[in-house]
Amino acid sequence: MLYNSHWELLLSNQVDKKSFIDEIVKGESIAELYFLKNLKGLLFSDLAIEKFIKREYQYDSIASTTSARKLCTFSSGERKKEFLKHCIAQKPDFIIFDNPLDHLDQLSRKNLEEAITKLAQHTIIIQIVNRKSDLFSFTSNKAQLIDNSFTFHPIDSSEIKESSISKTLLPESLDVGEPMSNPLVKLNHVSVSYEDRKIINSISWEINKGDFWQLIGPNGSGKSTILSLINGDNAKGYGQDLHLFGTKKGSGESVWDIKKNIGYFSTAMMDLFQKNHTLEQMILSGFFDSIGLYIEPTTHQKIVVSQWLEVIKMSHLKNKIFTQLSIGQQRVALIVRAVLKHPPLVILDEPVEGLDDSNTALVTQLINLLVKESSMAILYVSHRIEPNLIPKFIFELIPNENGSIGQIKN
Picture 1 (tube, rainbow, N blue to C red):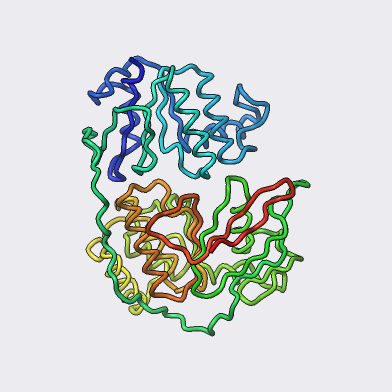
Picture 2: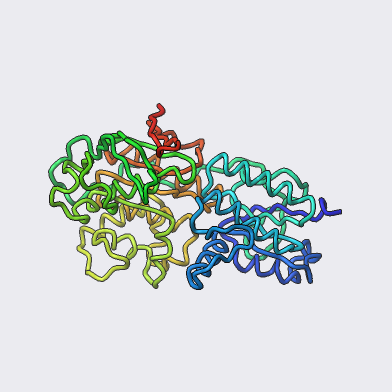
C-alpha cells in the first residue's frame, strides 16, 4: 500500500513551486495527493536546510537531535545526510523532497538516493525535481506539471528541442584596451589551510585566453576556495605564487583591479535583482557593475544591449520586469550581463542548478556560443556533466588527508 502512495513529480520552471508545495501540505486542492490531508509532513530542501542553520546561529545552539555538531560545519553532502536524519527523527508520515540531489557530487547523490529509497519502505515520499535524470525509480507514480494549474500530466519522453539562441556573431566590446597576455590565471603550488586543516595542497593550474574549463570535485574538496583565490576575495593568496591577469597577488593591486577582469555568475546573484528593473535595465547595469541601473547609459551602450537581446531572442521582452521572466530567461540574461564587457575570464558557478531540461538547454546553448564566438576564457563549475557541453579541459580536485590535490583531465 505504501509503495502506491509515493509520487515523483517533474516540474517545469513555469510552476510556482512554493505554492504547489503549500497545496501538498494542505492536502486539499490536488486530487492525486488528497490522501495526504491530515497527515504529518516535512519539507526536505536546500531552503529548509538554510533555515535550520539560521536557527542554529540565532540561538547559538545545536538544533539537531542526531549529532553533536552544528549543521553548518558539515560539507554539502554530509549536511543533507544529517538533515535527513533529523527529519526522520520527527517521525513524519510523509516527506517532500525538493530537488534533493542538487549541488551534490556523484557519490553523495548515490548515497542520498539510497537513503531515500530505504526510507520509502516506511515513509511516504513525494519527490519534486526539475530534471528527468533526477527522477528515482522506486515508484510507478510519476507525473509532469507544466503550469500553475497544478494538473498532473504523463511525463513527456520526447527530446528537448534546441533553444532560442541566435547563432550569430556576438556584439563587440566597447572597451578595446590592451590585449591581456597569457596566462590569465596562474597558481603555482598554492596551498590553503584553515585552523590547521589543509583545504587545497600544492595546486598548480593555468587558465589561458579562450580556454573552456570545467572545475569539478567532491563536496568540500575546495572548489569555492579556488574560486575565491581567482576572484581576489581570499586573503590566503597573499605571499603565494599566484598570478592574476599579469600581476602577482599582493603587488599593490586592489580587489577591484582583479574583479574588473572577471565576469561572474552564480545562482546566489538571482536574489540581488529583486527590484522593478526591466530586462534591458538589468543588463545595462553590467556596464557599471551595479545592482540596478542608476547612471544614464550612452546610446552606444543601449545599442550593444539591443544586439545581445537579439542574440538571445529576447528583444520583445526588453521592457518586461526582470523578476517576471522565467528562471531560465533570468539566468541567460544574468550570464549576458556578466559577459557584456567581454572580460578576459568568465566564471559560471553552477548555472544550471534548479533549471528544468528546457531552460538548461537554453543556458548551455548560450555557453556554447560564447565558447565558439569569443576569446573569453570560461570556467564552468558544476558537479553535473552536461551532454551538450564539451569543455576543452577538466580540472579535478581530489581530496586526501593532506588537502585536495589537482588533476587535469583532457
